[in-house]
Length: 89
Image 1 (cartoon, rainbow, N blue to C red):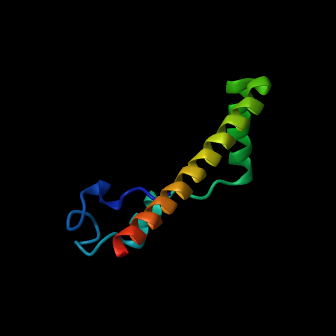
Image 2 (spheres, rainbow, N blue to C red):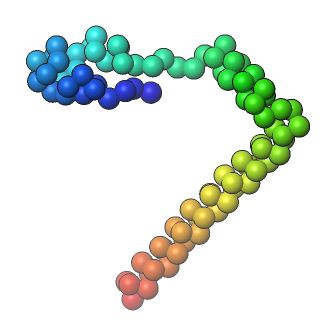
Image 3 (cartoon, helix red, strand yellow):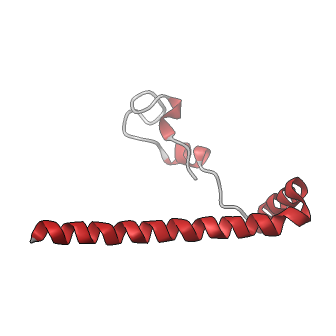
């Protein structure tokens, strides 16, 4: 994830002289990838917040939400295809 480089004032106001962000400015605002240790800490925090009894239900509801979202997108694409076919006739 990168933060917007114009947080320092945008083009022409920073050290870059109006030519966009310099390599140093980009490195300064870049957040590295999540490693194993960070992921483990996040999972432990989630476990502490929700407890071991609520996690399976939370995972199930999240899975159902993703499934319904994909189904809705597929149905929307099918409807758009039918509408396009009717307009072509």
